[in-house]
Length: 360
Ligand SMILES: Cc1ncc(COP(=O)(O)O)c(C=O)c1O
Image (cartoon, rainbow, N blue to C red; front, side, top):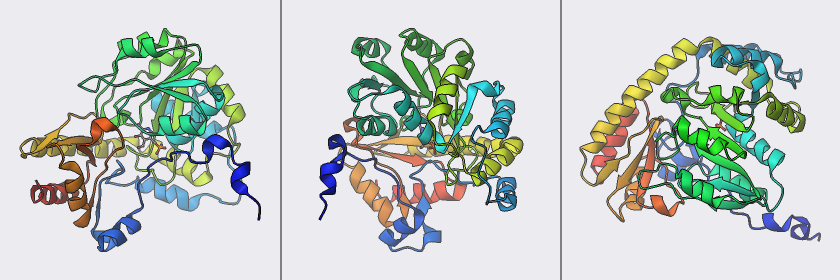
């Protein structure tokens, strides 16, 4: 017998993995409920699904030819949508792949990243995979990033600073002036704008003057393409070049590329769905605010963080799951009394609210 573990990189032997969400059929089986009856609000997915034009484009695409490794046509389309020159754009198999590529480009074992707890768990996960150290800088009591504490945490091994705006799962924004402060460090500042369309606030324009800014976006949320995996980054031409050089050549599959292009062409219709989600978010917030034992945090994303009475969150989470309503809990110590709920269709939000009312 070969001892495989002897060959595995030591820091990966027992690496703490990413806690991901299970697919609908697994959740349904767990709850003992048919898949079409569950209410899946744990992945911040788009309840209205993709553009019909995206599905048509996928059906038409020739599957036997490799995609364009330089992503020429889709970068042109992204350029029209973002108003940026395609030299500033690169696409990835989800924003997740671009985060991974940023680690590969900048991080050697022992380098450091700055992460602002509580936030999206992918940055600390990939730091662990890359054998990087994590300077975990807590957000303040309103979940704002603490710029002074970030500056104090830097040392000569620090390479990357991750900022998520709107932040997942807390829903709040980071302002442009704060990002500009961080850019002065000369380190790579990654601003993850996965939920940009739900708030309209961006720092993308700053990439023209700041070579160290990397803005990440996704089509998983506003365009309903989470299953196809398509994200993109906006950054200096120099960083685009380096990422292009190291990415796997055919990282965007032809179906994802065709769906992304069709979605960008159908952006006005998809942005109407975004408006519906934003209206649904505000309605959900108001309903939650009126409930005893629940404090919703204001959100600029397509989700709401619910702060529960101390010690009740896990019980409520499990109660919801047993009724086929799935929300998300987190590892962060700051969020032990919280869960996050995505904004669903009006019917889904109502089902969630009805189930929750019976549990609090
Ligand atoms: C802040 C943030 N960044 C990135 C992602 C991942 O996006 P993608 O589906 O494009 O990989 C998510 C998904 O939930 C997210 O919340």
